[in-house]
Length: 427
Image (cartoon, rainbow, N blue to C red; front, side, top):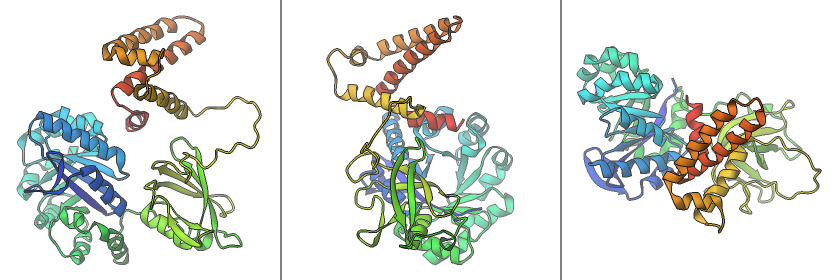
C-alpha cells in the first residue's frame, strides 16, 4: 500500500479556515490555496464543507467544483451530507471520493445506498471513536473502501478491528513522528494541519520515507537514466503530447537531473541547451505539464511524455509549438472526435461571450433555456424517426443536429466536454 500526503481545506463562508473547531480564516481564496498545496506535491486533497444553509452550501459546491477543475490531485469531498443527493452533488462536482460522517447515524444508514449507487471505491467514512467503527464494522467492510480517523490516538486499536486502509488526521506532531505513523500497516495517508503547515516540506518528507523503506505515492521508473541512450551532448529528446487529444505540444530535452526531478515531482522538467540549465515547465508561467505517462522508444534514445497541459505549451502563447506550416497536400484528415467536439464547442462558447448578429447560436441563447430544451427534444425525436429509415445518412445528420444543440445546452449550463468524458470514463 503506497502512502499519501493529503492536504485539507475547511470551507466556511467562502473562505478556507484553520480546522473543524477553529474558524479563523487561513486563506480568503480556497482555490488559490488548493493550487498551492497541489504545486507543493500533495497526493490528494480533502475539502470539508462547513457551510450552514442551502445558499451557502451551494456556493461551497461551486468552490469545490472549481478546485476539482483547477488542480491535478484527486479531491475528496466531505461535510453537509444528509442524503444521497448530497453525495451525488460532490461526485458530480468532480470529487473522486466522498467521506461519510460516521458520528451521524443517518450517514451510517446512508452507506449501503450510496455505495451501491456510486461504487464502494468512492466511499470513505470518518470517525473519532473506536466504538463507532466497532459498532458499524459489518457495513463498513462491505460498503467502504477506507476510513478517515479524526483521532490519531486510535490508530492501533482500529488496526486490531479491521484491515481497511486509514487516512489519519494529525494537527500537531513533530515531522519525524510522521515516519513512525506512516510505517504502520493500516495507515495509507496523513492529513490535517501537520500537512497543511508543512506543505513545503513534502518533497523532503517523501525522500525521508523512501530512505526508511516506506512506499509512497510516486512515479517509479522501469528504466534508470543509465539505461537510456544519450546523444553526443548527454541529453535525451522528449516528445510531449496531450494525453487526451494526443496533440503533439512540444519537443524538449532532459539531462539526468531533469529526468529524476520529473519522476519525483510528477511535473515535467527539462534541460535548456541555450541557457545550459535545468528548468521546470510552468515555473514562471503557471503552465505546468503534469505527467500521465513516460515511454521510451524501441532504441531507448527518445522519450514520449503524455501530459496534462495547464494553459498553453508554447512560449508564444500558442497551444502547441507546431504551427508554422511548411507544405501541405490536400487530404482527408482522420479527425480526433474529442478535438472536433472541443473546436465546435469553443465556437459556441465564444458566441455566448461575443454575440454575432444573425447567429442561430445567439438566437438560442437569447431565447433562453426553454427554447434550447425544446429544440433538443425535437432533435431527439428526429433521431428516433430517422432510425426507422433504411438510409443511414439521415440518422448521421440528425445525430449531428442533436449534438450541436446539446453543446448549446452544455454552454448554457457551464458543463465541459472534459467533465462529460471523465464521467463516462468513470462508469
